[in-house]
Length: 140
Image (cartoon, rainbow, N blue to C red; front, side, top):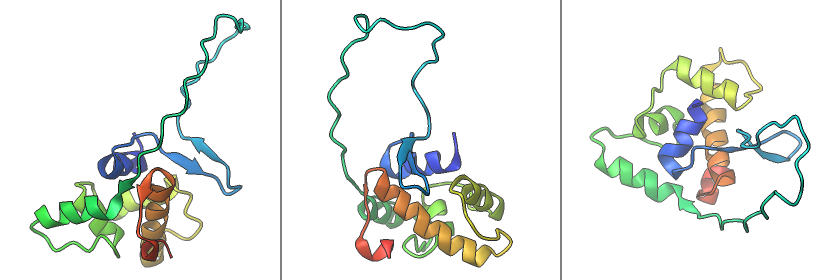
């Protein structure tokens, strides 16, 4: 499971993220469609189930709730390190670089301050794209 999938699961309870590409198209990160080598008769394929309504998870409420139970004073609203610590994930530079790679960070991972700022904004944006309700002031 990718780091972002773990983060998504811990905050939203969803482990299959929808990653939006730079072209703006969304696609699940994991395909559940089996490969077949022979044609499938349309008469044997069941009709698709109606889409399940997306449940919006209040990201701030979830993270504020975790923060209230945590003995450390973690500022998840401003820090990717604190956000990762709050949900019990490894927040080391190595993990953050891996997360940046997963999310296609366009900058230099050697500049950890700039990477951290980008990661924090990108993670909150991805939460929003995957069923999270994120306060507008955190998405700017």
